[in-house]
Length: 309
Image 1 (cartoon, rainbow, N blue to C red):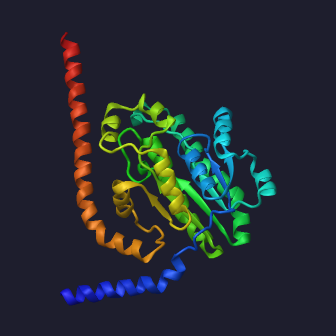
Image 2: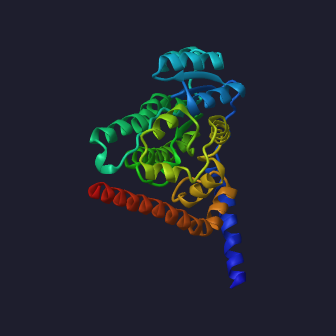
Image 3: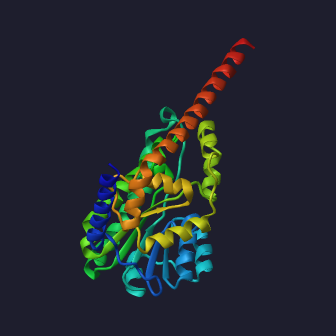
């Protein structure tokens, strides 16, 4: 039995070795590259722009908040121009980072339908439109990277995130389907799943989160945007998947499904670790359910006291 298992493992490694030229992208050299970052006026987007600039890239920022945009431009010593001007003045886009997004939490029945439409428009379609603007030129040039910034809430649904998680899950579907289309043209896609990150958006979001959502969020550490940006930029030049920290690594392995594999090591790690990670995930899910149940009991008790007072 052990010999059979060993033979199967060897066969699997050999298979991955044989197909690796087809699945491993050529890394993109950032020095001299033209990088466009949407949502780059603050938070993760701004830190990604700064990190790319440090590595020698030319940066174009696209953002809605003009004041924040001007401040970010000063930090990276570049000017924000529109898509057409960017391609005329700085050359074709070598890497597009779709980082524009917003968050909204609340119980499903309490959220307006317009909230779902808003998040899909900003988080999902806000990644579709810029990608369509650059994809044709990338395919013609046979070079390019498109980065989609999703969220760990785009890997698992959490209490209070029915609208937000839906929009972030949609990004993954877009990324996987697009990767299959553009891979023959040497254009590659990266989808990033950052955890809660210390940004202005998170601070505003925490004010309106349901208690259950806040307690679940507190089970993991909040990351610094600089840390997240550095990892995304590192992965963006050669990997399909980008995760941050041990929780992120576990989630990415658990939810890999039919996602593209960009290295033999990555595929092998997913096969070996998935069973163990599923066991660990069950404990996480159990703890989340306990948090929600305790909140429900506390609310019921509070309502009973109010009625008898």
